[in-house]
Structures are given as C-alpha cells and as structure tokens.
Amino acid sequence: MINIVWVLLIGIGIIFSLISGNVEVINNEIVTSAKAGINLVIELIPMMVLWSGLMNIASSSGLLDKFAHLIKPLLNKIFPSLKNDKAIGYVASNVAANMIGLGSAATPFGLKAMEEMQKENSKKDTASDAMITFLVLNTSGVTIIPTTVIALRMATGSANPSCIILSSVIATFLASAAGLFIDYLIRRRHR
Image (cartoon, rainbow, N blue to C red; front, side, top):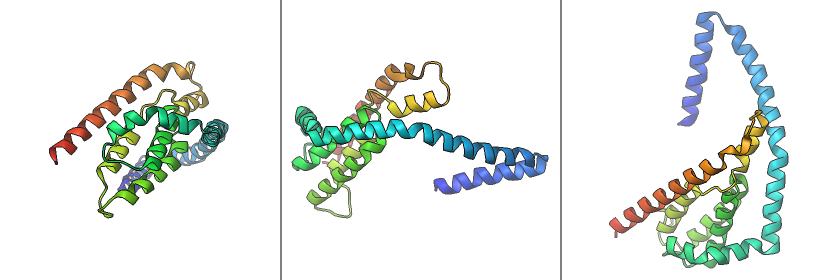
C-alpha cells in the first residue's frame, strides 16, 4: 500500500512540474537528492558500525545475558504466558538495543525472539499473546539514547543534536506504557 502512495506522490509531482513548466526543478532534485542520500548514508555508517559492534561485544561478553537476568522479573510480568527463557533473553536484548536507539541492531534479536515464541505457539497461523505484546513493546520501544536520530541531526547540521534526549525518553516511555496498558486491557477483555 505504501508503495502505491509513493508512486502517486512522485507521479503527481512530475505531472505538476510538466504542467507548470518546471521540469528543470525535477531534474535538479533527482540529482541533488540522490547525492544527499548517499552522503547521509556515508555519514551514518560509522555510528551504526560502532553501536552494532558494541552490541556484539555486549552479547559475546554475556552483558546482554546479565541485563536479561536483571529485567527478567519485569518481562515475566509483561509476558505472563511466555515460558521460554531463550525468548525472554532475545526480548531483553531487543529492548537493550532499542534503549540505546539502535533499531537496526535490535532487529535480529526481535526476529529470534519471534522465532522462539512461535515454537510455543499452539496456533501457528495466529500470533500468540506474547507475540502481540512483544510487537507493541518493540514498536513503542523506550529509547534512552536516540543515537540514530542524533546522528541524523548531526549529519544535517543541527546546532544541538542531542537536545532531543529528554523529550525522546518521555515520548517513548509514555508510548510504551500506553501501548502495554491497552494490550493488557484487550488481552483481559478477550479472556
């Protein structure tokens, strides 16, 4: 569906530029946007490599396992039906990566958590309660250090790229709390 929206927006823009006689603007934007996109990716790669490497080190050293053990009581309350310790560990690793703003580093942990939860799922064609709750938590994920957003702000020349940390923490905490509360109410209602 989103592909259709993008095609329509681009098509409307091109048609409007042809009608208004501003074809040169479209040509300039295509060239400058491609160059800007490549430059942005090149500026983000070092930050992504650094944080992904740190997550790999944390995983290899057992730090993520210790973090998982630390937040396991909270995760057991959030995921009461989930009994798979491996899945809880992957969920904790996903939460840790999201907390430092690394959605791309969190993705593999999230996929592994879903695979482990699917093993316990009695209805293989329907998401379990734990899977739905994890999706809610992952989507709204509490971010303490929004590293990707800070890097984007730095790349685009922001005077104070880290000024968003407090508002990011508040927004993601409220989104997570609201999402988990609504998930709890819906689960309770269906029982």
